[in-house]
Image (tube, rainbow, N blue to C red):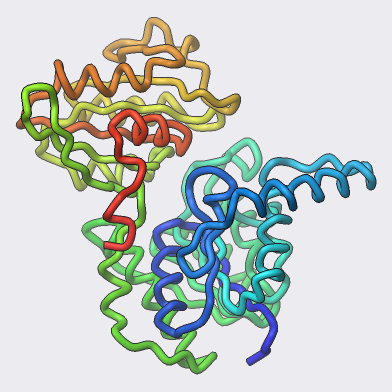
Length: 359
């Protein structure tokens, strides 16, 4: 195996986290990209990148871009910063999650990953990837590299697109097939398929592999018990499912429960379809707007039936009100949607640090 940095590319946070544990079990250093601020988005050996490092090196990147008349996006800056961090920390293995995923993703600068993993195909980022599953699949297939193995999940249809691309690139293609009762089982199956390649092709030595299957990704149906003013325990879930496919998976797991949902999304999502799903499966739906310029402007939804429209700045107030006044002990609160609303909820409920990140 080459002694320089190697990469595994994946398009799903749960799978990325599981692969991090696979790499840790192999006893090498690893970087993982996380949810919140830039200095929390890059970790080595489960240690977050320091704020000082980010500020110093990000300023250097800004100056370099200005000097060369480059107009970079936020994600492109973060990608450059991450690559520099890999180099400075002498990282050997990286489980690197994509952004929008596919051919035009900033992370696609990596030419020869150990494995490319595509977990699912759905209607997301349609203004860039296309408005049909076939067009989206073609864009997603752009991370398949010459002579590099690729693993795709059971929902990566149409399969023909990936079969054709893999054949053209001489890439060994593994299709994970089967019906799974929930997305955790599906993700585990994908990670197991990727791990077999690491073992067989790259001679990884993995012990205690069952530890991989125990972990849960933060903000992926992450469960908390919140105490209201009466001293009653209210169950609350955080989930960053922000498209129709992801929301359906979450609601399937909560089927039969009395759910009060709080939903916020970015402006590039199919809001109508997502709200329709939530309205069909939840007792009540609260639409909120994050304090972010990419947040969906919820005033566009005025007049929509059965949705409580709550304006920017109301997220904290809404969560507290539901916990203390609206929610009963036999109900659960589901905060779902954009990453951007999760910080406000965590801070409001004083759950900024979670004990379930690697549970």
